Length: 370
Image (cartoon, rainbow, N blue to C red; front, side, top):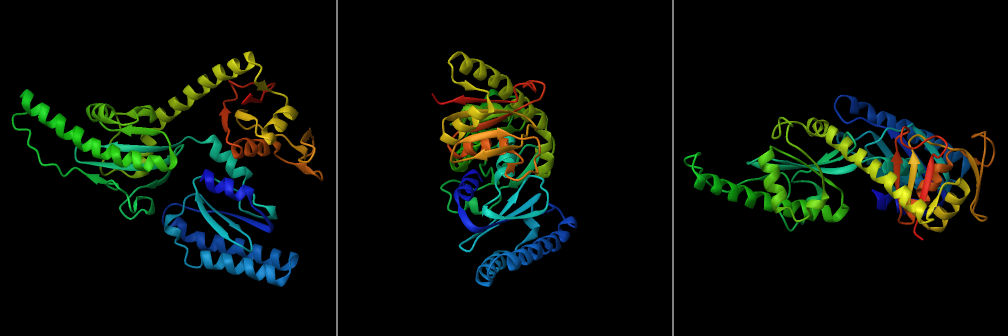
């Protein structure tokens, strides 16, 4: 997703059409989604027809139609984002809420999406039992998908695709004997080693952190054999219905652990901010922050959650002037979103801080590379 948003942000087109549609994950609510999409496409058609020449309008509308005519709404998340030009169309399902709208400009409207993605904890949840293993991709408290055999991401895998069944044949015999316990331990570790090889192969594509779910014994075995234990940000041993529970049930079960991880990031951030301040590598003035972000000097941007600031931005002069009226001509309603995009686009990262940790008088701080 980050790579896609970066590619979209780099694209200049005349016009660049961005369409956002609210969608639903489950039946029967998702029966409304084709109508919602159709309504937004009518808006696009009217605007393109009125604002651009016939050839341009027709090309873009046909491109969108080709990508959406047989679109399967059964796999929708919370937002359907469509980015279209005369050259290409990208259709993306996203696990974030959005305001339905159509934006036509010379750049795609990725700013809000980048802000939402940067503020989320995006992770894999590995569910372990002695008989099988599941893998779920999630963002905050929302399921993106549970991996299954037909998933495109698992086609042509070198290792076993999820879900993975434990086909090892073993008997524990006398459950009280040390020998039986050792046998079971060996078989389970061998099974979890297979699971981890699949986890690491999928992890290699996106490098997201892991939350491990299972009973305490199985979690311990997995941590013993895991190739990259540092990727594990949390373990949850009290979740229920590990085999038959829905993906959302599992993700709901790990939220306390995810919040604990988020809190640890916030505390670590305070230390990094103090360290950068001592090394004269911290900027808090909005104009300086913007210029450094634009020039690619920003390493980590810390932003008070909910902080937005209207401003006039001059990219050529690399200047930012705060404004009171977000609707005035030439004013960007969310200059902080622009800064976030620049930092991430240039290889940095953004961390969103709670309002009770980052005060209103210092709502933004940028740690520079040098």
